[in-house]
Length: 124
Image (cartoon, rainbow, N blue to C red; front, side, top):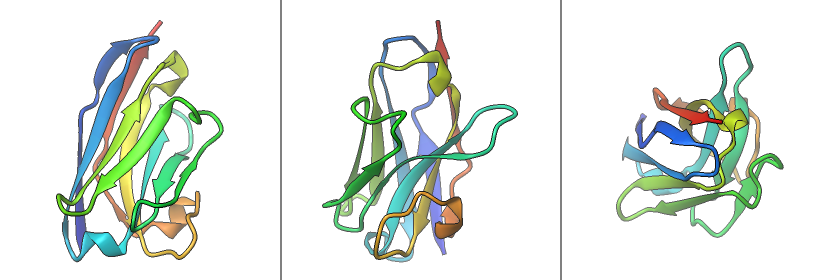
């Protein structure tokens, strides 16, 4: 089992920044690829970004490319999501996820473990 706890959400004005963190515990977290997903009210959960076990590979949704940066610290069992130039359409609950995969995948089905989510609201 892997337990994931997100933090860092909140209310920010458009153009601002937030940094989300995901604290992982349980099995060797360094064995897992990590991802961030988000879900806005009334919408399906969508892929945001993912990072490989070593941190050497990343994958971003087109909607956040150039604005968001994912990183991980395996020694601290943490994954971070730096979000810059936030837009009202970034408003959602953000979820951290972990999965075993050789190639980073955007499908939620590829991730076995999920956190409870942290809410991000971007005001216009």
